[in-house]
Structures are given as C-alpha cells and as structure tokens.
Length: 369
Image (tube, rainbow, N blue to C red; front, side, top):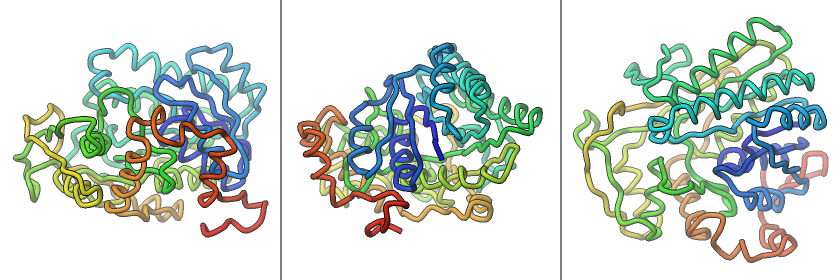
C-alpha cells in the first residue's frame, strides 16, 4: 500500500513511518518542518531497507497540496500534521483553527480529488475535556477546554459527518493519551521546539541539565501522592496502533474511533522517580499551583482497540523512560546535536545497521516479529 503521511517528520509521525516501511508499505511524507526536522527522516531511512520520500508541503497551500496528492496517488493517508501546544492555542486561537481545521479541510479536498478515501486521523484524549468518569471510553461524552482540544473535536465531528454523507470514505479517529519514549536505537525521538509542553520531555531535559527543575502543577490532588496521574503510552506502541487501524480500514467503510492508551496511569512523581532511577541523575522539582482545567486522573479503557484491532500497548513505564533517556543522552539538544548529526548517510546507515529491519517481502525480518 502507498501511504501518504502528513507531519511524517515529527515525533509520532517518524516512528510510524519507520514501522510502515518495515511492514512493506511505500511511504511519502508531507511536512512543512514548523515543528520537525528533515534529519528525522534521514535517520528513519537509515533504519530501513526501503526509503520514504520526503516532500516539503504546507497543508495551507491548497493548490500545491492538491497537485501533490494527484501526482502521488496514495492509497491511504495518515494525518499527523497540526499544531499541538495547549498554551499557545489559548493565546493564538485563530492560528490553531486555521492550521489544524483549515489544513484538514484542504487535505480532505485534495484526497477526494486524488480518489483517495482512506484516512487515519491523529486525534487526542483532549476531546474528553474534564471528564472524571474513568476509565475513559470511546462513548464518553466529548467536550474541550481549550482551542487545541476544540480543533481536534471539530475535526472529529467533521469526519463523522463526511463519513455519514459518503460511503466511499473509511476513516479512523485515534484518540491518543500521552505519547512518550523513543526508538530503541536512540536515533529518533521527541524534539520539542522551545520549552516542552509535556511532562516527560521536560523531565528528560532537567535530567540532562538543560533545565533547572520540573514545575509540578498541583500536589494536593486526590491521588496516592497528590500529583496528577496520566496514561503514558510508548510511541512505538502508538505507531503500531496506526498500522492496525490502517489494516482494519481495508475492509471497513465509515468512521471508527479507538482509544490508544495503556489503561493504567502514572503520577508526575512516579515519572520523575523513574527518570532518576534510569538516568542516575538528580531531577529536582517544585510543587506549584494547579493549572486551570487539569483533572486529577486521566486514563483510557483500550479494550475496544484490543478487540477490534488486535492491538494493545506492550511497553511499561520503565521501558518508556529507558528509551527516552537513551534518545536524550545521544541527542542532548535534539536533532541538531549529538554524534549522529556528524555522520554521512553511509556512515549513519552503518552505525544503525544493528537496528535495521528489512521489508516483509525482502525476507526474514531479523530479530523483530
């Protein structure tokens, strides 16, 4: 299958592209590099016997987008491209509606013109708003507490109405919980621009010495240690969920929704302690005031994905932290730092050879099933 991946140079996108290549798919990446690096794609291609094609395209460039999809003629699209900072969305809501909602509208129009009607959409558990009915189920009522969350909710509703109006469409809305971790090689991982918005990359940057301490928002929640509890999922497990959804859509039209999470939660202090244990570094923290809109606990019920997709998260918190720390140590300032940046393409391929997995049709896939 030829899969077009928007935002494929980003954190979740790059890990998913690698799994698509390893699974024997042809991949074309569209990215505008507003929050990503071409270096991620170079490393993905070094980790695979087949290579993804990379095109610099902004989803807001309607004409170029339509021309590109008509030329590429993908069989399916996985749509990651979008802005994702909650704080920035509050201060610049129109930027988020324009980029996320209008960009998706443009993508859907371009897909229709290219006669491609299979879409896996990168949604979010933010569509559950401040719900305290745990665990969160796909049928839990939706709401949103910030412009970023509302863009995800609006897109979900738009896709539902599209699917109901036109039987040609096969659509998956994947509601992520908290993606963390990195590829086992340490070659690709999360490289947030500026101050990280999420806990684990912030903790990793404190452990590596880039930041002084972690600000823990609230220490008086009704949780075992008083700090917020979240459902963290390894990015490799999350990527595998996209491939499972893509396989499901081959024989299923309409709109389908799945939670992608582990079903269990870890507190902020548990994450900090795990980083101390794995890294051997101090991770100082300070309890500060709660953030408006934060709930004490949030975790998924992933049973629907297990039953319908045959998918479940396999990796626990310890492995999430180990893989993230390996990435952070090898790339202390992200893709623009570390020894791998200095290697030529051939040298990089040789360095990453122990992690190379061949395409299915190329024969045995090494040590990975």
